[in-house]
Image (cartoon, rainbow, N blue to C red; front, side, top):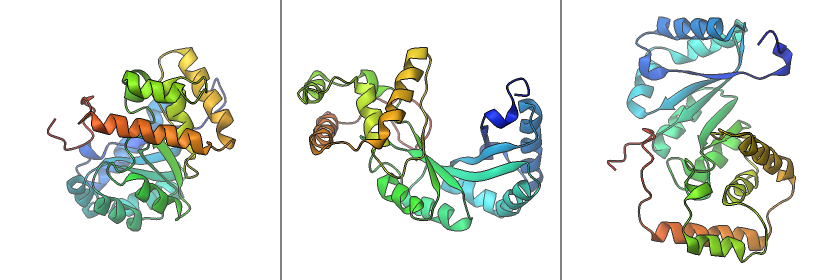
Length: 236
């Protein structure tokens, strides 16, 4: 970090709430993270992977006091949350604290998953930044579309990869501040950057209709193959 210049980068990391057993643990984890990252502060700090039972425990540990003091001490610049539960839990979390941002699944297939786009728009109405995660649904929207779905996209006459289509939809959502995706090759990164750069141009009605049709095709196939992400209570 110091070699690059701290003012040139933004650092985000997460409070591992599943491992927190007391109020003191929160400070212990944050201090350890700062030491390992070789920095005095984290730009974006996430209360991550929140489910109802764990959330209740964190509230009982006085999470808001920890967040207040982390910001006041300068160790954290912005605090956010990342939920993995039903809309009611999402609402509880939103109302609990004056969050700077939130992070949630956001892709053209999962528009009603967990809090869904409705929850995302609700949080944006509170002036939170929004981080879109799983824009490619674990890669499924990039390389596992059935032939009939590819035919719909190709019929638009637009030369765009399935991954680019998925990112294009995400960037078309005005609530999205940042989109994050697993990338293991430079060409993945370059394509994602291109999609971000082109995000100022709204999707046409024909493009939106094509995505809606692809969603219908995917939904008609039944449950998607589990990617074993461990982020929901699905028995499959």
